[in-house]
Amino acid sequence: MYDAVIIGAGTAGMTAGIYLARQGKRAIILEGNTYGGQIVNSLGVENYPGIKNISGFDFATALYEQVLELGGEIDYGEVVGIKVNDNSKTVLTADKEYECERVIIATGAANRNLGVDGEEDLVGLGVSYCATCDGAFFREKKVAVVGGGNTALEDAEFLSGLCETVYIIHRRDEFRGDQSTVEKLKQKSNVEFILNSTVTAFKKGEDGRLNGVELQNKISGEISGLAVDGLFVAVGQIPNTGFLKGLVELDAAGYVISGEDCKTNIDGIYAAGDCRTKPLRQLATAAADGAVATM
Image (cartoon, rainbow, N blue to C red; front, side):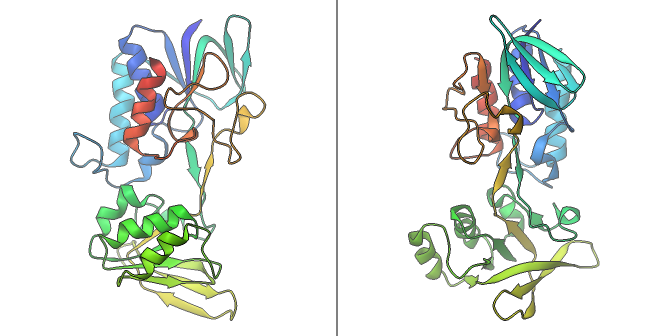
C-alpha cells in the first residue's frame, strides 16, 4: 500500500512527489497524459524564483527527472475515481487500482480556448493563455486580449504597462468584469476596446508566428483585420475535476474547495495547484501547494 497517491504530474503534483520522496514515503504520481501540465507550452518562464529564464518544457523535465532521481515513482493512466475505505483510499484508473493512505489531487485545469482553426498550432508562437507568464515577451509590441471578465480586464491592465498597444476584444457591448477596472482602462492611452466582435481566424508570418487576427463584428457582420504580435485568450479555464463529482466538495465552476492548508472536506484527501479554489494560479503557488499538501 502506498503512503500517498498523487493525481497529476504538473508542477504541484511533481513537487509533492519530490517532498514525499525526500521524506522516505512510498508515493506514486499518476498522470493521464504527459508530465508537466500547461507550462510545457510556454516558450519561457521568467517569474519563478531563482531561475532567470527557462523554457516551460525544460522546467517540467527538470522536475520530472528530480522526482525519479530521488526514487519517486510515476505511472501513466487516467484516474476515473477514488474509493474511500474504512482505513484507506483506492485510486482507480481504467485498468488498475492503487491503495493508499492519502490522496493529493493535483489535476490542474485546462484553458478554455476560442475554438478557432489553428489555435493550438500557435500556442507559444503568439497565442498565450497567461498574461503574467508570457506578457514580458511582448514588451513594446502590439497585443490583444480576448474576453470580458475580470481576468481579461486584469490581463489588459497588466499588459498595458509593458506593451505598445493593448486591444481588448469582447463579443458583447459591455464587460462582465468590474466597472472600476473598465474605467481605469479607458484612461490609458495605449488601450483600445473592440466590442461586439469575435476572432474568426489567425494570420501567420513567414516565421510561423502570429502576426494578426481576423475579426467579425457580430452586429454588422463586417470582417476586418487586426495586426498584433500576441493574443492572450482569457475566456476561462476548466478544472480537470470531472471524476470527483459526488466525492469532494466543488465550487460552481468545478474547482475543489480547499484552503491554504490544501485540505478538502474528506479526511486524507488534499487538493494542490490549479484545480483548487485559489486567487492566484502560477508556478510558484502550485509548487507551494505541493509542498503544503505533503506536510
